[in-house]
Every structure is written in structure tokens, then in C-alpha cells.
Image (cartoon, rainbow, N blue to C red; front, side, top):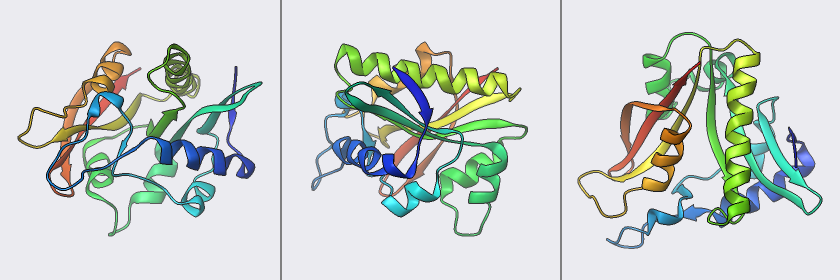
Length: 189
């Protein structure tokens, strides 16, 4: 497996991975969060093309792209999201986090429940951590959807445990659209 910077030619595959991992509510029911995925969160092809930077990487094998991680250094993050129209989770980072960091906005792999999918996810996460260390950054940050406020069913234990196993700690959270709770996680380097 090779982890390399994403290119414009990779965007369709990355978009397909995002679409395959989409999770949304239907009516009043909560989806099965054991599968993980992007909970009511997507990016257009134009958004992804505009996000290409050294911290937007893909994991590729002879069989093709198996996963991706879209991250931003703190400088890029601040330039992209410091406007008035920034979402509440981005404002949370801007207001609560100082210093230099790597922000991981999205990370996804094909077949996340398979052994191979787990290896790709861990490799991408370790790439983020090692890259942040090499760049002398102070921390790695990310959000994960933890579930719906006030409801235990549908809690995203899989993603929460993934962060914890890597040494991340929860340092806050924000509620977005209809009670979706995003937990803020950080790894101090």
C-alpha cells in the first residue's frame, strides 16, 4: 500500500467512497451507527478538488484507491474557515484551539468492517499522526458524529473507540442540525 497526496484524477473515487459511507436519518429513526460512515455530511466534487493539499491523501494498492484522509494544517484551516459563514464545528476549533495542528476533516475506507478496511483506516490515521509529528505540529484534531443528543441508541461507538485506541481524547462537542452531536477529539503530540 502507498499513501500519497490526492490528485484531481482521484476525486471521483474519493467521492464514491464518501457516497458509499453516507448515513442519514429516515423519518424519526436513527440509523445503525455500528457501520460508521459520514452522518449527513458530504462534499461535492468541486469542494474536494478545492481541498487538494499536501494533507489530502489516498491509500492505494494494486487494486486501486482503498481509502482517503482529507486534512488541513492549522494555517490552511484558519484561512478556509475563518469567515462569518463557517459552520459551528469549525468555529469551535477556531475559538477553542490555539497553536499549530493538523485537522482531519474526513477519513474513509472501502469495506470499513473488513480486516483490510481496518488496516487501511489505521494506516491513514498513523500517516496523519506521523506527518503532524514530522512537521512539528502540536496536535491532531478531528470531529466524529457521536449520535443524536439525548438518545443512546445509534451511538457511534465504533468511531469513538477508534479515536481512543489511537490515544485521542474528547475535549468538547457541538450540536449541529437537528440534534446531531459531534465530539471534538485531539491527540497531543
